[in-house]
Image 1 (cartoon, rainbow, N blue to C red):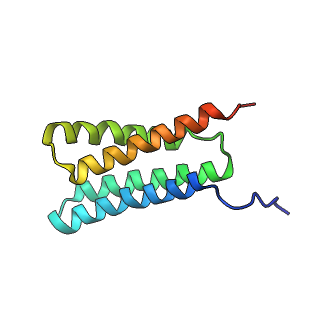
Image 2: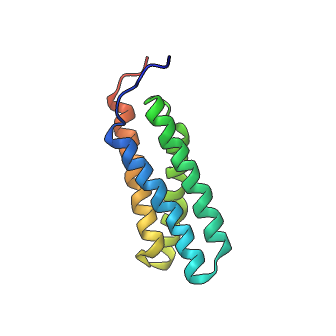
Amino acid sequence: MPKDSGPLVPLHWLGFGYAALVASGGIIGYAKAGSVPSLAAGLLFGGLAGLGSYQLSQDPKNIWLFLVTSGTLAGIMGMRFYNSRKFMPAGLIAGASLLMVVKLGISALSKPHQ
């Protein structure tokens, strides 16, 4: 019988919320502007972020997928925000992604790895 790992820690719920934000951004971009690339990117990156968050809930040392996903989005959307100066959607996603990278980095550095 599998061992119960207990409830998910707040970081993981934050990660699932982040994944939902990214995916819903793609859906909204498609609904408002008919942008298929927004839909595809939102669902792809939202799915990867959700998978990364799930992996974190199973093993707190397994941060790489989530870190790469949020770091990539922070870079891409940060450049879009820098060029357009529009908060929605690029600034919001860049800010949320940067916060996730910082949160993951702090949690990775504060826990000793075996």
